[in-house]
Image 1 (cartoon, rainbow, N blue to C red):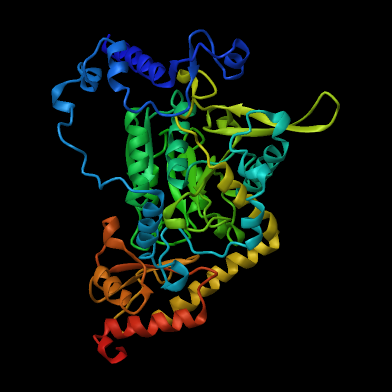
Image 2 (tube, rainbow, N blue to C red):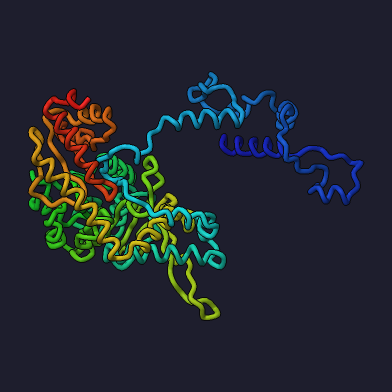
Amino acid sequence: MSSIFLEKNYFLFYRVLLFKHIDYDLPISSRVALGVSGDVMVDQLPNLGREKEMLEAMGMKEIADLFSDLPKEVVMDQELPLPAPQSEEEILHDARRLLGGNVPLEQRTSFLGAGLYQNFVPSAIFQLITRGEFLTSYTPYQPEVSQGMLQSMWEFQTLISELVELPIANLSMYDGSTAAAEALTTAVRVLNRKAEQKDTVYVSRLVPPDRMSVIYNYTQGAEIKIEYIEHNQDGSINMDSLEKARGSCGIYVEYPNALGIIDEGMKQVKEIIGDVTAFIIGATPLALGLIEAPGKFGADIVVGEGQAFGSPITGGGPIYGFFAVTKPFLRQMPGRIVGKSIDVDGNEAFCLTLSTREQHIRRQRATSNICSNETLIALMGAMHMALLGPEGLEKLAYRNLAAMQMLKDKLSAVENISIPHGDSFHFNEFVIELPKSASSCITELDEFGVIAGMDMAAWGLNENWLLVTCTDQTTEVDIEEFVDILSAWANDELEVLQ
């Protein structure tokens, strides 16, 4: 009752705000031209100073009466702690001053990765993406006027499908974390009736906490139970732990994993867990330029963070995720799919052929309750992949690998620094063990203009572990500088460099 009351009051308040009595001396033709209907006409200017008149029209005395049915304990009885109003000029001045305190990542020597990577994005992408056909066509609801955007998204789906070697890919997701969470809920919807472990999924113990929190938020509402897959000392999957996942709805592991390790045991996973359990892989797409695609060794669903293709880091967002499946999961996957068809004139045409969000279909049948994609950023990814081509992708992946291997070789020779998983295969990042805490290392190297890496204590691991990352932007000079400063820090000789 109270919500209906409030809704009616707000509606009336809004109507009184927008309309005013007209001058009846105006001729009828003028009233029509001004959009007048009856005794009121639209006023595009704010009705400041008429609050009393509007309240009287609603039978109220003061604005607070609009909220009289709200519980007193949730009503704020003091002014909001906001600064005084500013002009546009003042706001821009303050914004520029605040933004001036940021240091562009490209101006620092950086070895920070852990999910987002500082790869080069061709200038052509930023030019193409500003074309009106793309910039204004966020959601192509009307295919007759959105063929360019629809075809581009169809090509994005095709590129992702070829990259991971699965037959179906959607229009993208918000990011890699939401894609992972939605993959697990998809697996439960499709396989729960056949599963021996009902409403249960297994997740790698090495999944980073930030991604794990998203997975938990998605699964707890659906009452899905999360169990964990353990790893061996060398970072590989513990096969005995994996056996326990057999008969569950699905498992989620990452490839390479959060420690940068390419686990060769991945090829045995599907055989161990069986056909009734979905094999879900969170892949690093750039690595697939060199390592085997997950679809080749039995993955049912492949998801991941697409940022490395086409998108700068941009302070952590916006970015985009990708989501690909085998046919049994098609009808329950989230998001949207663009299909290619033939129009009435026999011409090739594109349209949305599957829309599973609650904005498109009945809410109880929707497989996702969010917008589910980042169309414009995903288009940037498609442009980047198209510009690279298969050979360009392989070369780009190799540049990442080569820089990582150079850093690994040099750090392995530094006194007081060890590489815990030195015998494992890595793609572009790996963990080093320091003589002191990684947090102190990061703080002290920052004074030398170097971003040292990711503190593994933030993920609940060894406080002396530091995850270091190389990309195609990491030069030999960067590596030598980093190794020299890190070596001095590890041996308490930093003052020599100052």
